[in-house]
Structure formats: structure tokens, C-alpha cells
Amino acid sequence: MRKAESWTRVAAVAAVMAVGFVRPAAAQYSQGRTLLTVFGGWFIASDVSPLYQSSAFTVDVGDAFEYGGRLGYFWKNGFAVEGSYARASSTVNIRNFPGTNPGSGTANFNIWNLDFLFTTERYRKPVIGYFALGAGAAYMTSNLTTQTSTRFTYDFGLGAIFLPPKNRVGFRVDARYRGIDLATTTGGGTVCDFWGCYSYASSNYSTGEITGAIVFAFR
Image (cartoon, rainbow, N blue to C red; front, side, top):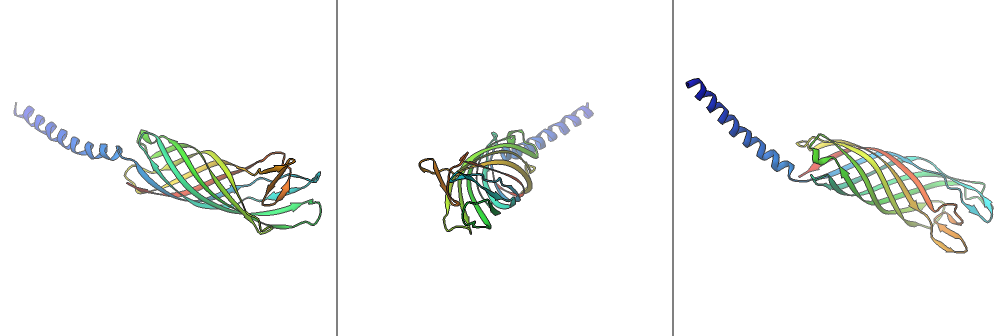
């Protein structure tokens, strides 16, 4: 009888301890997290093949190193909002240009974005997967021209954040497609951007990015 009473007391103490442990954990998971991401990686550029005065030429844009930061708030219901800035400087080679060829130079991409992330955060696992979808503005400059250009941009991609719930520092990998709308039709089928004015087969400029990052968590 005494042995049964002892086990009953032990079970009661264990239950009290369990309640005391679970409540803070539940409170922790009921709150969202603010994440600061510092990233770097591969900016994947594509070439431009415009038609200029009925003559074909090519603007070769090279791949480059990309870096930047993201700041977002992650709710526990599997949704997040994140703002970001990224910069990349690509080499540019203009080939078969009709007339005086401006030669080679650089193109600088400064991209501001607002993304919506649909995450696996609600499952309370150390690895958070997500699908990202967003839009923003790309500010482009080049040393081949004094003109600058700010264009609409959109992106979507997949990623994962390695960050256990109690940790403050984690890691992140991310892969995205980004489209930049280069078209500003001025009439007569002419399109102008910071490289000049010509007719495009497509006004959408495709890029991609693959990045790795360090993540800092704030409650």
C-alpha cells in the first residue's frame, strides 16, 4: 500500500513538472519569430538578344556574386512576410552592335523585394521549408551609359531554414527565379532600357539566384 502511495506521489510530482515544462514551450510556440538573414551566392544572368534597326546583336551578361539581407516575421501558422535587398554586378559584353560598339563594362543590379512565404513552421521542426512568392523593384546602372533604370521585378522559389526553436542562430539555403520587366514601350514597337532603345522579342529578363545564409532569430 505504501509502495502504491509512493508511486502515486512520484507520478503527481512528474505531472506537475511536466505541466511546468510544457507551458513555457507552448507559450514559445504560440509566438512568431523575427528572422534576420545575411546571404551570399550565385546570381545567374541571361543574355539579351534585341533587334536594333533590323540588325541582330547580343548583350552578354555574365553570372556574378550576389549578396544582401532579408528581414522577415514568421508566424507559427505557416506564413511569413519578408523584405529584402540584394546586389550583384555582372560583366557586360556587347557583340555585333551596328555602328560604334560601346564595348565591355558592368551592369549593376540593386533589387528590393517584398516576399510572402508559405512555410512548414507550424510543424515545430528544426528545419523549416518554404515556398516564396514576391515582387519589387530592380534599380539598374551600367558604366556603358549614364542612364539608369528602375523596373518591376517578381520572383518565386524554394528554400529551407535550419533553426531549432530554441536557437538564436541558424543556416539557410534558397533558390529562386526572378523576372525583370525591361519594357517601356514608347511607340512604334520601340523599347527603351538603360542599354538603349530597340525592339525586344520579349520584355521579360530572366535571372536566377542560389544562395546560402546565416540566420539570426529574434523573439
